[in-house]
Image: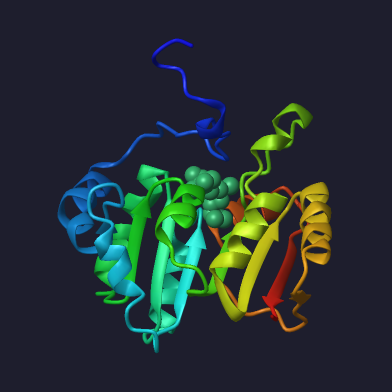
Amino acid sequence: MKPSSKPNSLRTIKSYVRRSGRITDSQRKAWNNYWPCYGIDIENDPNRLVELFKDTKKRVVLEIGFGDGDNLIATAINETSSNVIGIEVYRSGIGHCLINAKKNNLKNLKIICFDAVEVLNQHIPNNSIDTVNIFFPDPWPKKRHRKRRLISETFVLLLKSKLTNHGLVHICTDWPDYNEDIRKLFKHIKNFKPVENIPERTQTKYEKKAMALEHVIYESAYRLVL
Ligand SMILES: C[S@@+](CC[C@H](N)C(=O)[O-])C[C@H]1O[C@@H](n2cnc3c(N)ncnc32)[C@H](O)[C@@H]1O
């Protein structure tokens, strides 16, 4: 084995590619000025995240892959008594979100720039999250890329371990076969019940593009009932 190659147990397929998309001046300024307030540097200062779970009376809402963060910001505005956490790896999107977090003077929002799977596995306590929102996970439409899709059996089992009893997972996709796989996974994994009255949410940037292409939007929510 070459010194740099990882053993199999550590080799993971990522559900994202790091987009090098242009970061605007205002987004760069937001990173410099507002990241210290809203950001959690999970590798060097994971205790900031641990703090959020100490007040067990507060609901915790997690959004994975929030993009530009329009729904994340709306959640933090509407649920002032919840701790709202967003995880994203897209720096320009995080910059956009930081600008809006500051504009709205949010006090209940924290942002993590890291792989959500690793954060869940290593830093989020079991039975601690009340709602997980995953809106338009990367569809990876090519067959040979399907293994990169975020929502897999292993991932749903991971979510199950992190959710509180009666916790909710809310998902949207515009990709019919991904929707079908998600539906089957939540049916197959014990203790998830489909929810009829799906909570309201804010339209996302990806969704607007999908609708402009006349894609059907598939939306589902599942409650963990132990
Ligand atoms: C198709 S975009 C949708 C963004 C946003 N939710 C929307 O609807 O506009 C999917 C996003 O998920 C993020 N993402 C994918 N895998 C992730 C992971 N493992 N951890 C954190 N973010 C991830 C990507 O960076 C990307 O911004």
